[in-house]
Amino acid sequence: MTQEQIYSNARIVLADDVVHGTLVVRDGRIADIGAGKARAGEDWNGDILMPGCIELHTDHLETHLQPRPKVRWNLDAALQAHDGQVATSGITTVFDALRVGLEGDTEFGAADMSAMAGTIADAAGADRLRAEHFIHLRCEVSVGDVVDHFDTFRDNGRVRLASLMDHAPGQRQFVSLDAYRIYYQGKKKLSDAEFAAYSARRIAESEANSARNRKLIAKRCQAAGIAMASHDDATAAHVKESIDLGIALAEFPTTVEAAVLSRKAGLKVLMGAPNVVRGGSHSGNVSAIKLLRAGALDILSSDYVPFSLVQAVFLLADQAEAPLAEAVRLVTANPAEAAGLDDRGRIEIGRRADLIRIRRKDGLPPQVAGVWREGRRVA
Image (cartoon, rainbow, N blue to C red; front, side):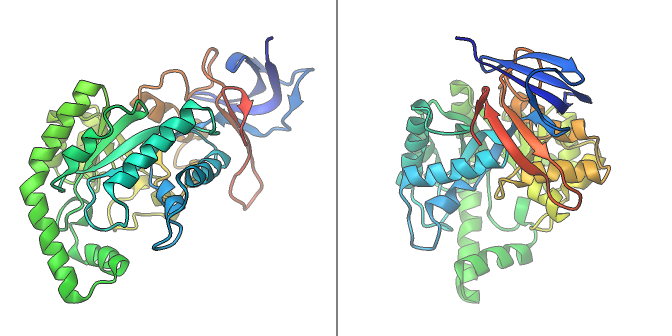
């Protein structure tokens, strides 16, 4: 039996424009887009209808796995809680970031991450989740056993993206040792002597392992058809290394130079939506809005605050940093293209009806008033 929904009197965000009209959904796909208000269907009273957000890099799942230090939550319950917050934030496709190569700043172990990956695959396969979940492996290449840990995920079909990162001090995200000290010494509650020893160990690990492990993991990703991202590129040399490895996505470049060079080389540039909302990077690196103004920003990621995707989109539009349709592409069409998901991300006939309804009230953040995945309401 055909399932049909009609949404009328909506401001529909298309790829390059916002139109007042009516959207018809049939059997989970967009069937028609018409002008004006229809006689039939649900009256949206001028609310905004946009594609569901696509999140490529969120660390948010960990906050549900470990809601307090030394407290570990049930895996299925943690995933459902995360999924609920993701969906009600307007995200219909999410790449959950799992750590590969544990550098000693977490209580999680390799077995925890592998178990979580299995839980995601099982829940997605059984259609127990509101959003569609894939897996993004965050590979800390400075860690000696990162390749062995990566190999434990080889049979998980939900793995679609891997990022190659090195968080050792003195380079990339933490060129500033003061910023590194503030982040890690405070987080780990280390004395000055303990912090000095920790920093020295991390630098030595990076020098011994990073170059070799980048190449090994890149080779595995290419063989398995897993998309690759660089992480925290800062210099022209970093960008060249990324290009040589076949990387397609530049995550969180820390300088304008790296972002512009990445974009010129055909990489899509991803930055954090919290960076937009806060007006700058919490690590003191380049601002996302500065990259947008330089024409070197393609994708926004919620990173650690799921709602920041929708919030950033409307902040950019309200502050005239980008037209609404362009701002929406940063969280819909562009990440879909980067991830090879050509069935979603745009409101076009034949695409998946992954949709969100946005209600605006002056002076308040946008309200996510409804979320649909393949035409089925999930929030």
